[in-house]
Length: 86
Image (tube, rainbow, N blue to C red):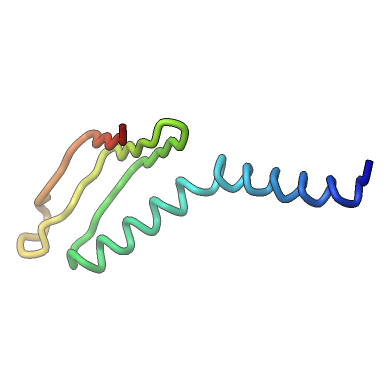
């Protein structure tokens, strides 16, 4: 067996797994909040974002979109949003 062939690929595979297991959801949440705030021009809060790849799904919890014309009020607010592809 050629360990010089298997070891780098095993390390790369484990790094990809670690990224998707621990860093993908927070990075996606930050990207969604930043881009949405840029487009809407108002503060947007998303408390939790979870993704699933085996059965493609996205779950956003405690989403609040502020009203930029009326400070202190929310334009849209919901507890959970679940999007799933069949």
